[in-house]
Each structure stands twice: as C-alpha cells, then as structure tokens.
Length: 159
Image (cartoon, rainbow, N blue to C red; front, side, top):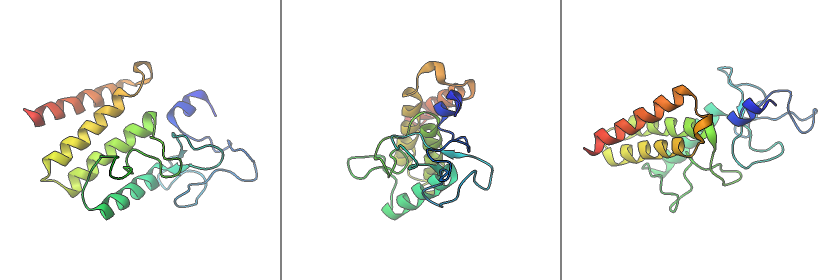
C-alpha cells in the first residue's frame, strides 16, 4: 500500500496479511470495491484483516444505529457514536475517514431532524472538530475550503 493511500485509509486490493485471505468488508462481507467503485477503508486502530469496510456500508451501519437510538447525539458518554467510533476496536476514526463520517452525519441530521437546530449545530461542531484534528500539511485544498464553510455555517447558526 502506498503511503498516500495509507494516510487516506484506502486499501490496495493486493494488500493483505495473507494472499489467500484478502480483506473484506466486515459489514457486507464482500471483497474489493463497493458498487460505486470505492475501495475498502480502515482508518482506526483495527489491525490484521479486521476492520476493513466500504464507506457506504459504514454510513448505512451508523444510520441504522442512530435511528435505533431515536435522536442524534454525539455525546460519547451516553453511547459510542457510530459516526465517530469504530465498533470493532472502539477507537476514533482518523484522517479523511473521520471527515467523511462527520459529513455523512451532518447529512443524516439534516434529513432526519430538519427542525432540530441544536442537533444540527452539534453535528456541524463535530464535523469542524474532525478538521482541527488533522495536521495542516495533510489537508487538501478542498478539505480546507470545506472546513472553512463548516465554520461559517456554525457561526451563522449561533448569531
């Protein structure tokens, strides 16, 4: 796996601990890219062949867990947020995967709780935290712009 892909949590299909057991998504159990062509990801503390998943599968999993809880909350003291914490290793998602999860979380709150400004503000705040947790040098221009836009949205909501 190249270091650039490693930083992004992307999985080179030829990478695996055992060539006879290539990594597969722990949710859908399929190997290789998802139906949109996106590769398996793993950017948490999982090691070996565990923890790989399709981003689309992780999104669906987090949505189902959050819908079961009945209300959006990023308060990890109540439950481990499916948008922030890997359910396998119980560590926070990192880097671009963390931002992707936070972005999808904002969409989830907007779609499921459109009139709950507190939950929406909380989701945007969590997204902004993901940008601040990444070293400046590894943020792409698109991510910098997205981070600034997220901050502007938060400011406009609290004015």
